[in-house]
Every structure is written in structure tokens, then in C-alpha cells.
Length: 433
Image (cartoon, rainbow, N blue to C red; front, side, top):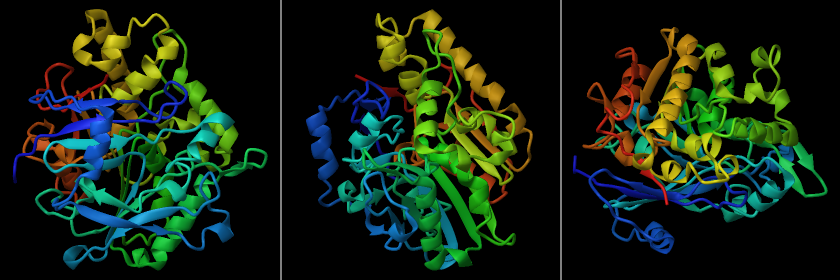
């Protein structure tokens, strides 16, 4: 496998300081290449001669009749690359939250999915690809867990691989509308319509299936995991993989609950409460049931949780967002972990401890898998450099792709937790500016 060194630029459309994403760039530990936003945009368009797999967009044509539409009322869509050989009857469904554009030599450009929690942010969102299929790319690159190359994706390269586009803003869980603002909150219907469409295209014959997703898609994977299992006969091997979806109900640096406040708006505005797992809503409020920490122990289907212990999105947007840090004490640390003071690192160690505490019950189930690495990162399955490459992050000398494959195929139990920062020198940390 050729050694690949990657530099990533994370670009988000930030319209409410942090609600819909974050911006910055990824910097491999051996490279210090800074690219401007313009250069990043140009890099995302410069793939002449590259051998990356481009996959076209398919719109779900019968979705409108079911009310399964994006925020602006356009049809939802997905990208499907057919499997072959031993993978012809195996299906991997990836719920979008991060769109990755990658240059084979050094550059990756990606944008976070996030959520919209009020009319203003949802109206903005419906004029982007995260709220309308009119603005979605007609083709996207499949990398990482979606790659079609055995040397990049050893266990799933020849499966039927699908990326379901994210255009509802509530992790495929809402079902409501706002007629005045002309907003459709139909994430749950999109999920159902897309699954029905894929079943009609051969997924009903699957002998193996894996539901995966990153960030907001990782949360959606947890919410819909048991629903996904229910689509198939018990003879089908069905499991779920949540990447960077373990959003914690954490106290921010000001003593408030930034993420809980965001989720309150998402759940209330989009009518998500009726689509959240009833085993949770029977004893907790709907907002609490949008937090995966209150869902994972009750998911019946085998579930693998992949998360960075120092999740960059959560540091940026939940723990130390500008709204909770008006004097900027956390600014440098928020952007670059190397600039954190000793007390700030201690605070972030507390966040890691919180994460480890909430997964204790989940980890007791033999069927579940776990990979918590001590990196300042976010989403590691869809980027080739973190999924499977010569210099990928590892725990106990095992890369993420191999850990997931061992767990999925029952080759080995996988429940690995990294030692605390700064012990892991295989991390691909995210640095922001």
C-alpha cells in the first residue's frame, strides 16, 4: 500500500457561530501545510487523473408521494455503488453527515452535517446541499469505508455501498413542518422511503448488512439501528457502526449546557420526539433521548462505537464554543490542542472520563464493539488516512478498519480504549484556525 500523507481542510458554513459546523484544517503530524479556503475549494475540484471512485446521485423518485422530502421540499437522494463477487449480497448503508472530497496526494476537504434548531438556521440550511437536493453534488467520491479497493477497505470493498444524503437537519428523526417558513422536517420519512427504495433494488436479499454513519449520521445510526435490523430476516447478519456519534450531555466551560440547548430546539422544532426509541422516552424526556448516551445500552442490535476521546466537534461546539467563552480564554486551546494550558487539558481529561463512564453498561454486552482513541479528531471511517492506510491511527497495533472488520465478522471481540492523551503518537489530530 502506498504511503499517503494527508492534509485536510475542514470548511463549514457557519451562520450561528457554531450551530451548523466548524471550520479549520487537518494537519498530519509530519506535515505543516496550510491552505487557504480558496486553495481548499480549488483542491476539491482538481481530480483530473486521480483514480478515486466517483459515484452518481440517485433521487428517490416516489418519495414526494410519501411526504419524504428535504427541508425545501425537494426529493432526497443517495449514492449507490454495486457490489460484486462475494459481496454481491452484502450491503453497507452510510448515513451522511460529512461530505469528503479528497486529493490522492495531500488534501481533503470536508464539511460537517450538524443540525438546525430554529427557523432561521433551517431556512439558511434549505438553500444548501444539507437542506436541498437541488444543491447536492451530482457525484461524490467514495473513500475510506466506502472505497472499492481491497487495499483501502479490506472487508467491505466489494459490498453494495450506499451513502444516504442528509438534508433534514435532525439526524433523520423529525416529522413536522412549518408552512409559513416553507420548511419540511421529514427526516424519519426520508429514512423510511430510502430504505424501501433500496430494498426494492436488491437489499431485501442481503445476507449481510451494516448501517454506519459519522457525526450527525453516527447519531442517526444509533437512533435507527434496531429499525434497520427489523428490515431483514433473522438469518441476515445485521450490525451498526457509529463513528463520532457519541455526543455527550456535557456541561460547557461556562457551566451551561450548550449542546442540550441546541438539541432542545432540534427535537421541539422538528417533531423528533415521536420517532425516538420508546424504551428511552418511556422514562426520560425527549431531549435526553436525543443524546446517544441514553440510547446505546438499550440498542438490541450489535453496535460498534468509534469515537475520539477528545472529539474535536464537541470541544469546538459543545464544551468550549465562543458563546460559552466570551473572553476567549479557550480560543487557542479550542483551535489547537498543543496550545491548551495544564488546567484546560485536565478539563478535557474530565470529558474523556465522562465518555468512558457513559459507555460502561454498553461495553458489558459481548455483541458490542468499541474503539476509543485518544485523538483530537472527528469522523475516522470516511477518510482514507484514518480508516486504513500505512500510517493510520491504531490501538494495540490494530487500525480502525481491521478492528471494525474483526468485530463485524466475529473474528475477534473488539473493545479497546486508548491510554489518555498525549500517549498515542499515531493520532491524526485536527488543528483549527
